[in-house]
Image (cartoon, rainbow, N blue to C red; front, side):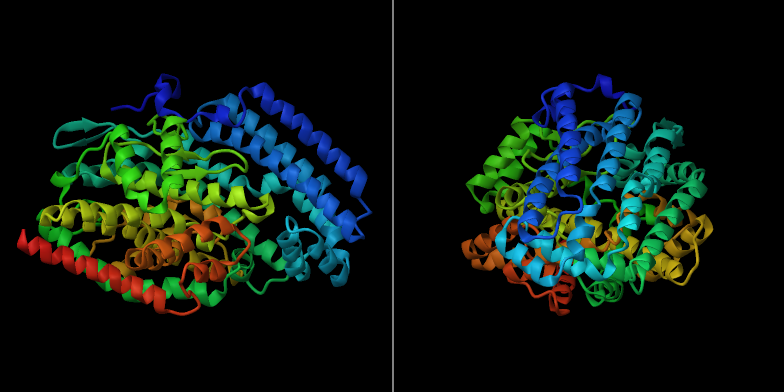
Length: 598
């Protein structure tokens, strides 16, 4: 069916942004407060940040300014994300973005002046304030890469322009692309970005599934050059910024902010490409055998092992599943889940112009906001549990930490979300010993949790690494280059077991994470930590749960190595990743065994 306009969506399927601001007027009152605070800070502190006392006084004000920026920014940006056809919300969001850039430029002197102080002054300032401690430690760490104050001010003023490639990508994808219907077996079917990614990719009818993939690919191909131009602009900007700040490569620059080493980054990609590929090829062959496919194509990889057994789940029914599945995390966590449903934290709607995929935004001091498109599948239950993992994470750290200490490294940030998916699966396995049910749960773990994080996003990361290598050597990329790199990456992983067409090569056009630095690989990194921590919970019980909840509350007070260590996982070695890959292989082997028995 055709997607409805946002105005026709029932209220109960939408999130409630009034928990940020009751009215738009309230939001604009905070905008005025934001302007006034920024102006006062410039007057009170510019040229005067030369003592530990004044430095901390300024940072105390900066925390409040960051809070106001977060609330006003989320209120406007979240409204756009559910309806890219709404020009009023777009214009309001652009206005807020310009204001944020102006304030950032006007206050760029803060980091510059603090950086210019001696280490002894900074150490004294650090000792004076627990709330500002890690912010100041990061300034010390960044000192070698700080530019001239006027350059920093100019870059801050240009921040909105520097984010333009991502905006162009989203507008092309979510506002400009209009998908015509396609025909399969003599019947006409509607098509859209969300319909394809949330529905047709899992369609059991091979003719419909493959026809949808072809029609979808033909439409996005029409936008390949503008999408490639936006992406090339993004990576060239990142390379320029890396060079300006004195980093040896764009990899060094992007990993610096994640607080992880190049060894950790490359290990994640190289070991999965080498060690996981044989297991996933077995899984692909199993899918082909079960479904009696003439050949295994890229369009067939997301079909279920047992689609007839995949239960339909309503939104109301999902609540009980998630409450029980995550009960091991305690009564406070269960109460958060109930509140999320009751107070409309979740936007379940399918409507035209809505952002694809799913995400969770957690503005400091407020509840979380979860975007997804509900299709009445058990897969949606796992998606919601995943996003509630982000919500639970930031509920804990936002409550326990300064706003400065909630910027968790992307290397770790997907661990709490994927942990919830694993807890859901383990709960389901305990509810029913019947072999077909067990196979369904295990195949859901492989086909959803591990496929999404260890295959889809990891392959995107392997492709992305090749793009950055070209850029690091002074080159640029276009649509032809990007399709070639993606096709080569897919063929390397899947070998001869999956047919990789030119249509499959266009997968590079579908991922917004490319505009977020080295983000794609972190899904597998987070799931590696989650797998190991979850296995501890399964064997050790409450002590492991207690450790995990301490990790959630720690925010960014620790780097990823420290957070993982707190959870009982040592990510400085290959062992956790190799053990996780072996665990995935064991699950696939059990799915094969159960298939032979059923």
